[in-house]
Length: 380
Image 1 (cartoon, rainbow, N blue to C red):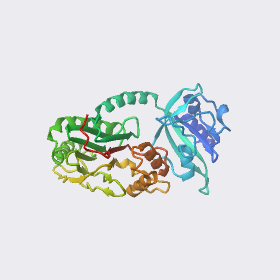
Image 2 (cartoon, helix red, strand yellow):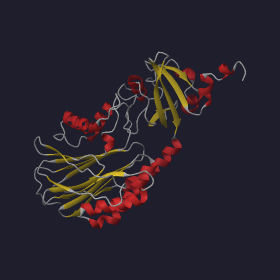
Image 3 (cartoon, one colour):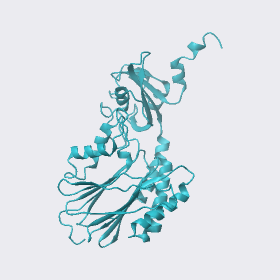
Image 4 (cartoon, one colour):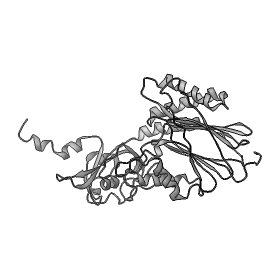
């Protein structure tokens, strides 16, 4: 190597040679560096943005729900600078290019430290994923049709669902269907991981739901069969699924639950009583002939059953700690749940407030069943 090798391989030369956009800010998020790929992807030139705050009318990041991400609570880069933690996984956001058009980009953020270890700024690396998102949008339409929601016009039961895929598609699956005039059955499952591979497993779960639906009302038999089928597919692939299956009997006013590897559902009784339901057991697909004993609980007028996948409680907080079941319960109590039930967006927002990142690290689904004051009303 020649003597000027060090200057030849300068940081700017390296960053201008890669295909991903890279920009650096100081602690006030004022842009101090903008590489050539950032110019190519967004149309914004260095002269346009260096010295400007990234909060100014430049990229104007929004999430997939079109929520602005430039505030202190919602900006991925600010979170990285504030917490001192890089993003744990790529984040999909939508940036604005110079022409004012929205552009899907995959983002990674990290704090920048000086030699003394002090945080002096932040760096964001991003890439254009327009082609990928077009394919995922088509996949999302297919996956959405695979989900089952069979509760209609029944004054005895209110059911709501809130599905938050980590990416455009996800690895959570739900199905709710009427079994008879007085019975409903449901399945909520969470395949390990997220993204395309997990989403493919959910399509298989849909086929199993259709194929073995005739095993109901025996919830345990259905769940055991589901496990055996998933074992054949997942065994050896180091994959599994957490799940809970239930039978709601309106005449008997009972819910029978069978689950494995799944957070305990919460039954809020009218008044102040709260019942955490233990459905501990092996995750689906781990052990071929695992048994899944069921648990039957009583419900009454005004009660609410709240179920959620573990993405809601496994988000690392600012100090690296997970929210956990106690943390989620604290959020529900803070929001006045279930007196103000069906407030899933507020729950999601509170979970993100706890998180070190501005998006949940995994897919999350909330499933809620609420029995009005009069559960004896004949179904329409």
